Image 1 (cartoon, helix red, strand yellow):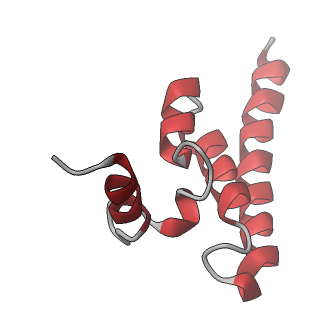
Image 2 (image 1 turned 45 degrees about the vertical axis):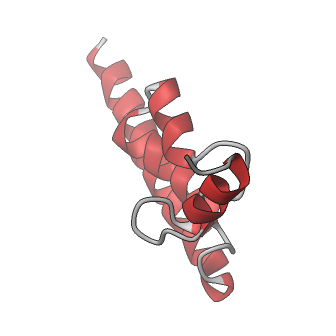
Length: 85
């Protein structure tokens, strides 16, 4: 059985199952998204915010723009739902 530190190291260096830009905190971003049942748009907004500047520092601004795009899409759903009431 692997020790906790070795499992954590392998988790951090697995670009497919546990990419480093999503595992920099105490929990993985996907675990938070699923725990909070955020859905596609909100989940993607959280994903892009959490990885901003970590996957590619030169694309930090782009990541935040993507997060805003998904958040705006979610807001549009609320706006349309309000118009129907």
